[in-house]
Length: 193
Image (cartoon, rainbow, N blue to C red; front, top):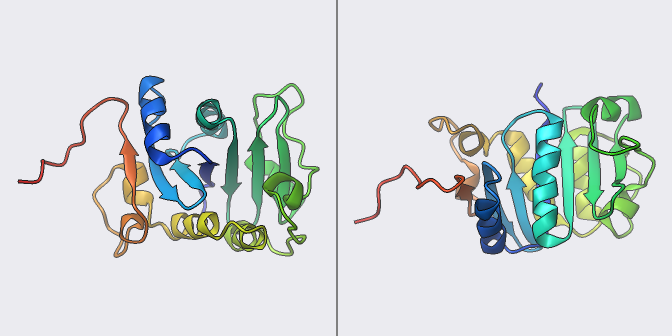
């Protein structure tokens, strides 16, 4: 996987987040309801665009967790305060390349531990990338979020994120429910008769 992937978790219920994103004309995104809230899958874009989307999610729920990864490293940014709390999973240099721009006076400081950012007792990750990130998420009691990270990394959300015809055998919506946010336009599927 050469393109960094990003997911945004928020404790808000999917329906509440969907309505708020429509009202704010924020998106597009795919919303995946999980046990602990909702995961937004923003389109594959620059980090700045995804941070702005995470900020909109934060406005709705008061909290957002942005997770970004590539094959060798991952970054978790907790967007609760003015200055985000961020940590690296995997090699620090590779993690820094994932967050080249961040709307903050001081940039992203990858100085926190995964436990500080994600809550709970997270062990220091020995591996980076999606596997290391998923292991840390499971260790802090977020198996639902770890499952979404794994499915997104496998490419099961690509047809939803890109809007292209499906080519994957098992897209994410066969494992988890998916709610597309279309910025006020009607979905293109015909109504059920």
